[in-house]
Amino acid sequence: ETGVTQTPRHLVMGMTNKKSLKCEQHLGHNAMYWYKQSAKKPLELMFVYNFKEQTENNSVPSRFSPECPNSSHLFLHLHTLQPEDSALYLCASSLNVPGAWTDTQYFGPGTRLTVL
Amino acid sequence: GESVGLHLPTLSVQEGDNSIINCAYSNSASDYFIWYKQESGKGPQFIIDIRSNMDKRQGQRVTVLLNKTVKHLSLQIAATQPGDSAVYFCAEAGNSGGSNYKLTFGKGTLLTVNP
Image (cartoon, rainbow over all chains, first blue to last red; front, top):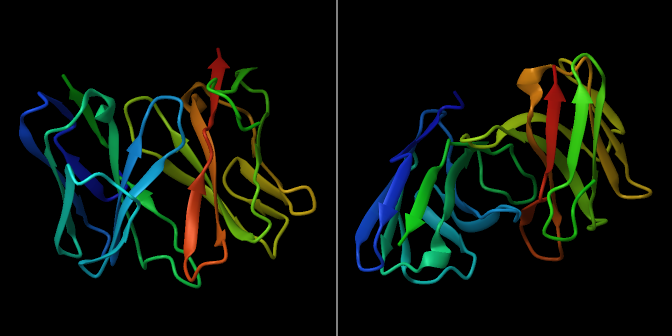
């Protein structure tokens, strides 16, 4: 185990539903990330949080809404998604947010999301 | 090596053989490189990293080689085992002209180990 947990592991939702993905890290890290992994595509960075503050939004549609109440927890709230949003959503954490240096990012197991 | 199209490169090896997985990167300013392993149904798992002031780094059964001249990275797995079957992808980090590092991931190579 990497010390990063995600729930649920699988989620099926309709386009009108509202759901949330949860991530928790037990590593004492300060930075947390959301990534999207689609089939046969590289990992796409969505959001970066540093000490609970959002430091990066990689042009993500507003139907994805992140929330970081503290350095250990990260949520991704989903509403009115599209079928093309179906993917594996990965959470990661690192000791510090990339700046003049970068720390290794440790990933959770992901949530497999299917939008019908 | 890394794919530039939709197909994931594949490498098939016999158990016990050595495996070499390649990665080409494009940013000459990248100075930190990571290899990840992703098994089916799991998140990426850190394997080994290397900074640009080195050209070789060894771990347990794995070696990463960095050739900055041709912007090439490779992962060597010694005595490959069935449990090594997974998608392997590299990531590079560097300052692309902005103020912060960006970690950029490759598409990955599917390694299949035949018993």
